[in-house]
Amino acid sequence: MSWWGKVVGGTFGFMMGGPLGALLGAALGNYFDGGLDGIILDESLGLGATERVQSVFFTTTFALMGYIAKSDGRVTKDEIVMAEQVMRQMHLNPQQRTVAINLFNEGKKPHFPVHEVLAQFKRESFRRRNLVQIFLEIVVATAFADGRLDSREQHVLEEIAGDLGYTQNQFNELLARMTGQAHFAEQISSEEKLTAAYELIGVSESATDGEVKKAYRRQMNQHHPDKLVAKGLPEEMIDIATQKTQDIKAAYELIKSHRK
Image (cartoon, rainbow, N blue to C red; front, top):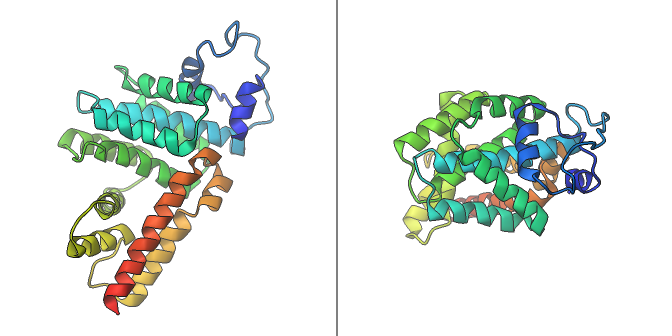
């Protein structure tokens, strides 16, 4: 990860200040002997720089996963497993894993400044809509980790989506696609699998072949791993995007096969 190389090298230019800078600083803790005092700032990593966006994405993702997990009053084993699954998919080294866990714990703390964090995340993401979307999908998946979405969790997710510029209808559509993906991965009947495939693609079963194909292409374009990494997705998260595209493709193939 290029931004992590900056951490190891002791250059903290990507630490942009604000709540995200404070979160990452707290998560790093005593990683460096003598603390963070005297670290050289690399002023070249301005707003929109890839390494800076990568650090922002990593920091916000794990902190918000902790916040969501705690939003219904307690952190379940399934939610912890979900966070660990993301870490495994990212192939984090021991130091990165420690920082991710610390960020998760920071997000669980009372009075976590969620709105301020999201405002900075949106600004730092520099209008990278697809990047913001996959972040929101990861956060929603955390809420789904225990197999249900209670009213408190849904309210919190709606607030997060609103902070990121999503309308209620846009969030509802994303939530429906995420529900479809969760069901599509389960051991269910062939009829239920087909219904989940349509939900995942984001169309109704009455959609024309052309509408299904258009929705499929749009979903694939939004989740293309190489495009997301180019926009600032940390390279270790490429497996998450790859799995998403594999599910989308499998859903589309199932729909095509059924329609034949």
